[in-house]
Amino acid sequence: MSFILNNTSSSKRELLEPDYYIARCYAVIITGTSFNQTFGNTQTKVTFLWELPGVLISFEKDGETVTAPKTISKSFTLSMNERATLRKNLESWIDRRFTDDELNAGIDISKFCGTPCRLSIGQGQKQDGSTYNSVDKVVRLKEGKCPPLFNEKILFDITDETQDLSVLEKLPAWIADTIRKSDEYQQRIYGNDDDDEVPADYNEADLPF
Image (cartoon, rainbow, N blue to C red):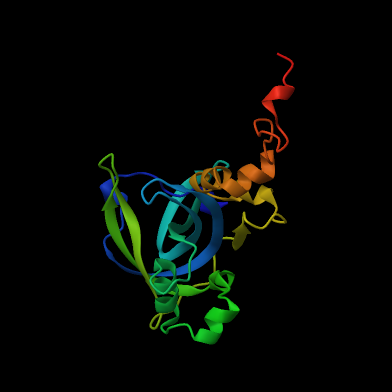
């Protein structure tokens, strides 16, 4: 499907110019918990993916040329703390602050999948010196129209053990790899490795040698 065939070239001529673009979210993926070396703690992440109907790309698939909207993504720490980047972007997406009642009840972020918006897209630089497009801000679509989704909607939460892992085959490779490295995936696939744990009733005097 088109969302696993993103244009990955770092060529500057293929980069989007910094600007606001009409977009529609087609996937919300909770990629799981892992250790963040920068902050020295564990964090649970969620990745949003959008398609840009005004920016079309063409690629070969199964011997045919396919034209589809360019896609872009952004990952957030899964937090609704008042200062959390995720909360700030969701509130600018709906153009208002969440009420206390909404926050107490819990914000269902899956409802943003399929919702149009405008993305402020900029450019950043990787450690290897290559340039990439970044989603700097998500805001409400107040003017203009956004076509229906081209891509299939995808909702996935690795922290939910009932979720079908076959969904990973539909995701961009880097997102699937992130999920496979998460604590939740490792636990689900391999379980607890108790071979190296010392029993509570361990006594060195009981050793035969």
